[in-house]
Length: 188
Image (cartoon, rainbow, N blue to C red; front, side):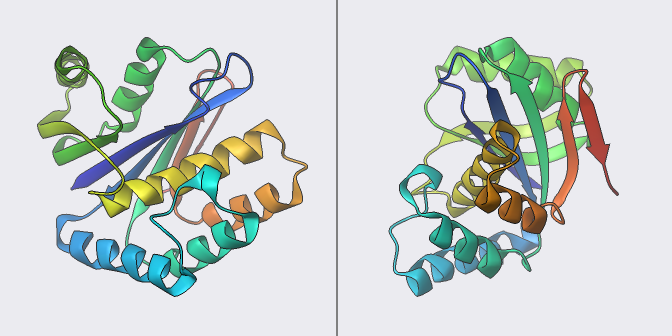
């Protein structure tokens, strides 16, 4: 199992921050990466990034990928964002036992990875490898970016028609949506 992690809204002092975890079975990784690259080519866009795309492109990108084999778990927390909230949320969502690889979008210091490994190990999660990556090298990070963006846009403004529409489409892939003490939705 590969897990790709992206956050959205962590730089803000108010509103929500969202952490999206995209789970991909090892045997489906190449297929999903290929589907992401094909979707970008079909849409004639550079590597997908939520904040750079219009609502129309966001929807088309989601529509092209929604039938692929992956699942998503989401953690939403109130800002301001802290590493402790992130670690606790990820540890909660990664309660699956053994994971082959966790790839986190962005650059973090080595000590951060070691601390996260300890938090996961203390939670009973075994991870072969945790590493940082950029979305240009790991297409699945772009999928995690899509889901983090959708959820944050929806929770920041549930009345936004575009956000509501994308959330309605995306929720079939979301198996767990949790946020501190306020809510939790889980599906098998």
